[in-house]
Length: 328
Ligand code: PBG
Image (tube, rainbow, N blue to C red; front, side):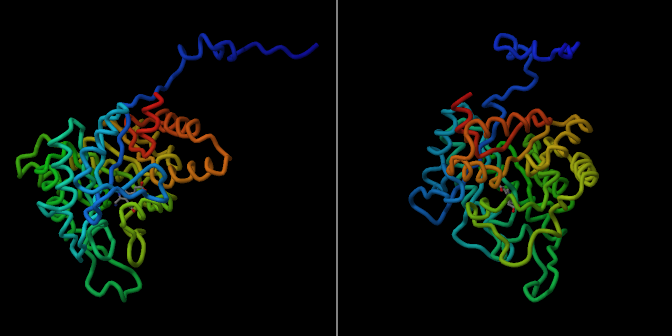
């Protein structure tokens, strides 16, 4: 006689009951779509390593965001590519910087919720996320000057808020960045603007395609001395705790899929909303496999985002936002 199981979880998997017992759902309103605004171009340019994405000139920023909003996604994260770069990332906090112009366009012409990425790496000629020691080019180990960077990050956040950003998202992993930005915003009268901190941001190889898209690859060295070691889990709790103490409103983990244990830890340990950044490499690899006919793009993208939510993320920054929202 064949063995008869006493428990039969399959009873709840038939078509009628499956949706009723589903534990996690995905909604277009959970998603944030990244937008790249490029001051050096007059027409939209596709980003080859990120199929379906493009850099747009300032004049097209609002149109681009309207396309996204039509799919049901209401929030965008804005990145900029400036015409000039220098050692101290002046264009990151210039009143007429590319991101500030773009944010103004978007807030004047759309109802999108605008999040500004606050970092210097797209605006420094050396490509690092802060000010570096003079002559660092010749030194074996690079030092990004932590404390000298803080004021510039605060200025960047304030300039974005002035332009109309609804929220700012510091991504440089500078110690004290959330506190410095909170103080800067409060002093300038933007105490109502929340901070979504890239609280646990890892030094990940999955950022490759983004560095093409935003032209922010470091000219020398790497980001090992400020972004987190992928080997560390407990350290993420410490990073998140610090950001909460300094006033972070939303806590982000980045990347997402290879770091779902961290997303889950942050969800369990803290009560603030948790965000996860499904990064450029996570997007590009599904596209590349789908192009070869090895994976179903839509199904694997959906499963990825569902898993990120299941792990505990409330919101997801993702390049799949538009395409998936259209399907949802
Ligand atoms: C800026 C920044 C990066 C990303 C978001 N903000 C690049 C980096 O840290 O190297 C990566 C996003 C992605 O890969 O999708 N510091």
